[in-house]
Each structure stands twice: as C-alpha cells, then as structure tokens.
Amino acid sequence: MTARRRFHELVGAAPDGLWRAPGRVNLIGEHTDYNFGLALPFAIDRTTVVAARRRPDNMVRAVSCTLERQATASLDDIAGKDPSYFEPWARFPFGVIWAMTRTGAAVPGLDIVIASDVPVGGGLSSSAALSISVAIAVNDIAAAGLTKTEIARISHQAESEVAGLPSGLMDQLAVLEGRAGAAVLIDFLSLQTEQVPVGRGPHVVINTRVEHTNAAGAYADRRNACEEAARELGVRSLRQATLEQVEHKLHGELLRRARHVVTENARVLETAARLRSDQPIGDLLIASHGSLRNDYEVSCPELDLAVDVALASGADGARLTGAGFGGCAISVGAHAEDLVAPMSEAFEYEGFMQPEVFAVIPTEGAGRLA
Ligand code: GLA
Image 1 (cartoon, rainbow, N blue to C red):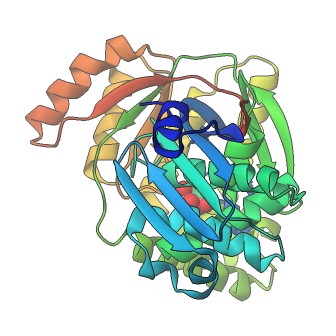
Image 2: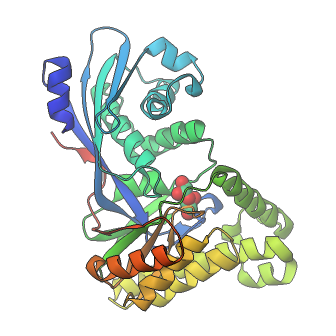
Image 3: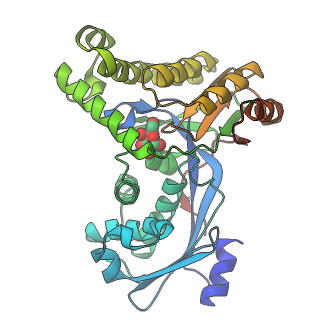
C-alpha cells in the first residue's frame, strides 16, 4: 500500500506532504569514506516514501507499511530514552527525531507513515533511505532549515547510534546527492560532491542474501586498523598516505588494510575520469573486488561467486558493494536477464541460498514529492 493511502486510512486527513529517499549502490570506493577518501556511489530506483503531518499534541506515531508495524512515543521519551528502548525498525525514525532535537530544532508531534521497496539488510542502504526520508520530512514540517550536509550528519548520527556501526557518510550523501543518470563522486575530506555521468550500463545488483552475524564488529576492526596504520605512518588519515609509504613502512595486516584504501582511492579517481570520457571501467571494478577480498578481507564465498559468474556471463566488471561480509555485488555491462539463470545454477550447485538479481538505474536523490 502507498504511504499516502495508508496515511488517509490512519489519520483521516491528507498529509502535510510526501517525501522520498532512494537506496544507493556503490559503483566503486569501498571502505574509503571513514578514511577521508573518495567514493562513487549512485542513488537507485528503489525508494522509501514518507507521508507525514504535524499533530497538535507532543506524540510521534510512526507506521511502517512494509512491516505492518506501528510505534508511538512522546517527544520527551524520544529525546530522553536510549534508542534500544524502541522496537528495532522504529529506532530509525525516532533516532532521527532524537538527533534533530539535539541540534536545537523544535520538532512538533507527528504522524509519519513509511512505505519502501528498498531491500532491507541487503547492503543497498535501506536504513539511510529510511532515516533521510524521515529527516527531510521533519526538516520541512518543523521549518528547521537544515542544509543537506546537516541532514546527512543527523541521519548518520541516528543510524550509527541505532546500528552500533561506526560507519562513514557515504550512504547518506549518496542518497541525498544522487542525480538521474549519474554517480556522485564524493570527497570525504572536503565533503565536496560532483556528479559523474554513468553512461555504460546496464548496472545489475546480485543480492546474495547473506548476513554476517558479526558484520558490525568486523567493520569496526577494519576501521581501527586503518586508524592505527595512519598513526604508524604519522599522517592524519590514510587519505594523506602514499602507496610507497604504505609499502615501505607497514607490515602484515596493517599493510594490507592500508594498501586497499590507498589503491581504492586511486581507482575511484580513474573510474571517474574514464566515465567522463565514456571509457570502459570493468577492469577497475575487478581490481577493487580483488583488493577487498585479498587485502581488506571483507568478501565471502557467495560474493566471490557472484563476481565470477557475472564475469563469465558477459559482464565487463563486477565487485562486492557496500560493507561486504555478505550483502550485494554490482556488475556492469551485462543485462539482468542474462545473469539470472547462471547465478541461480551456480548458487544452487554450491549449496548457497538463491540470490536475487535485478537491474538498478541511477536516480534522483532524496526530495519532496508533494
Ligand atoms: C557501509 C557503511 C558506509 C561505508 C561502506 C563501505 O555501507 O555504511 O559508510 O563505509 O560500508 O564502503
């Protein structure tokens, strides 16, 4: 059911507005954001829509059409309680309001109805789509006047608090800054963004449906290793390190982790340059996956298989996308129809869960619909 229709049913009145925020897929630039590096994600044609309206009291009622759940809390409870007090899905909308009130915004009571077709837990940033769609709705209704960067930070704060993941800002900025037909080149040192046309499709996502039980812990370990590597090199972050320094001064695990980050930043710049002149990028995606598998060690057998099968079935390039440890791969240059059967067969042969294979289209970032 659409958010607007459900809103009418529930509240018996029209919402003050409708807002949307897409999911995202990362073309290249993985585990670079928290190292003040570079990434090139794009917003996808899977979207979360929020219908919301100001209430006369100080209650917030949030409804998920997708989960068919409803959660209600007072603004005082949202501001004062630990997010884990609320049921898991409601921590995101309540977390956004919590983070927003901490900036001093006067958030009113609200009815919020949410509908989404972004796959949950699949590495396509369903949580950023949820938190950003709520944040832009509340920003408008409360006339808080927050900038995109502030909205990204608020949503990031809410999501990190809720998920316990010390993530970077990639997901939020991709969701906010997406453009139809373009990827967003993000520089996490300056927070500058630039749209880069992604002419050569098709772009296909392969969702392995694998969820790593300790992904948050493994993610935090990688981040800590990068910070330690930067300290050993005497630089503020790995963004300032060169490959030469990394290879001369670091050893073992720190060498591998830092080498991934430094080479990945270079691949992002090369990918953007090639896209601007309509050159193929497949080899860069393949190199990125190899680096994530061997140096950063965030791949898994299902993701490696998805990449191998995509390449064997005509893709120019493929790689894991998002944090890794499961979730999704992205492939470029092959049609979804040509990947479905070989993926299904190969996954069945290996005794893995059946993957979900679907095309994604670079889409406009978050905004108000009505
Ligand atoms: C997750 C995080 C992002 C980013 C990626 C890895 O998606 O939310 O901030 O670190 O992993 O590139």
